[in-house]
Image 1: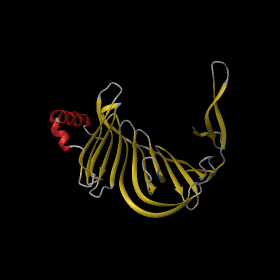
Image 2: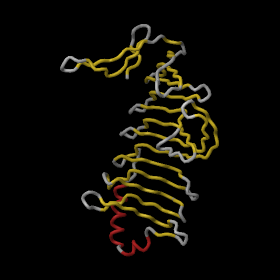
Image 3: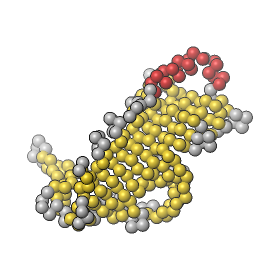
Image 4: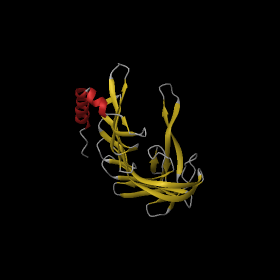
Length: 257
């Protein structure tokens, strides 16, 4: 995936701000006649070494954000850690998080909705926002993608309800699909190998327990699966549980975690 050349952008911006001096002070971080933010805003902070770093660049139209917003962390002053894009009404259109100049995850295709759902953990909830999201591997290949639903005032980056999520390997192969059925209060997980569907697990909707109720093979036939712990022996001869292994009727390991 082609990445943005943010380092060049930041260096040029800082040079312009330093060169403009008083001129920049006269045109940046202004308010309109009603005291609302208007025009270009540049925020900075002082780090532990006493150096000043830009933390955000935003554009406002009488209090509403518009266009592109950039954000930086003092830990990575030359690479933005976030990018947000707003429409003319101030509504969020895209929210991107970066790690060392590469896209780590993004939210996009925001859509206003009005849907009422019920879950055991949260009860009745009215969902008012829908968007898509992607998480990326370090090599730029998609790692996860999903459709996210949010209630009023929910931040989609922090809190979303997801009814379908897909996971991919670093080579781009589909490895897992998770479905949540709100009517049945059940989660279904489909596990894939490179040659196709491997097996299916269905869970009751119980975030505390989160253990499989029923296992199925790729043909939809129910499997009898046994569960056993995985131990590692320390240098002092002690055994420490490090994971869990599941086996089918033939004794073949079908899953480890």
